[in-house]
Image (cartoon, rainbow, N blue to C red; front, top):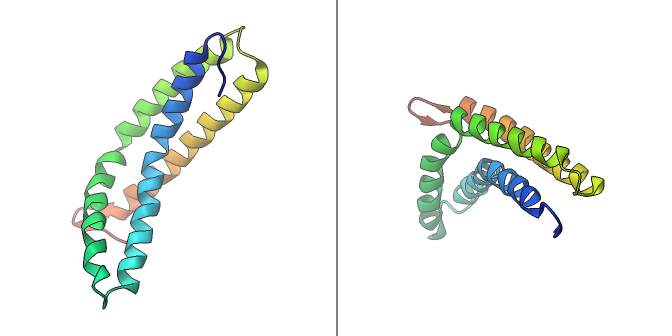
Length: 126
């Protein structure tokens, strides 16, 4: 991790990117738990999988809310502009941080679109 002048800008951008990846990780965990629940339906582990599946199913509509993505996008725009304008941060660090944040935001928008298509009144459609 970069530890020089204006390192707080790099850390804030990485934090925003990690928060933007939360819905994607929840979506992946949801699919893995749903798959495990189907495979272990007859076993006693099928009931253990149901509780985390229900918790993530309740969390995803709130995390996948469009205002969540818009808020993160605005924060990322502000901090990326500050990062790219900074003269003391090396260009290599600027480029890698900007690519990471941009990729995380693109993945957030794709995941939010999928969550919007999956979640309709009445629950999720897997």
